[in-house]
Length: 104
Image (cartoon, rainbow, N blue to C red; front, side, top):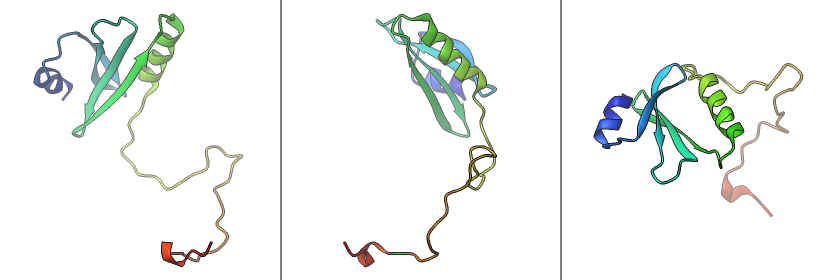
């Protein structure tokens, strides 16, 4: 969990947050008020979003939008078009070439 990660790494400069509906921590970089990371742990993996606002409020808004809209997916989907108007890439043939078969 994120709590175990925080206590295991002795992180003290953080506030509670969320990422993809899971508990997260917003870790403030010491010495630089413009940089922070949003961390969450899911299925044993650490997910991290690093933010550098460069002193501009708009970057803070962007990072909040990303964190608020982030979604984890449990399913592995085959490649699909990005939208209904695009189509998947079409291969020229079903042949497979090994590296040593390539002639340049």
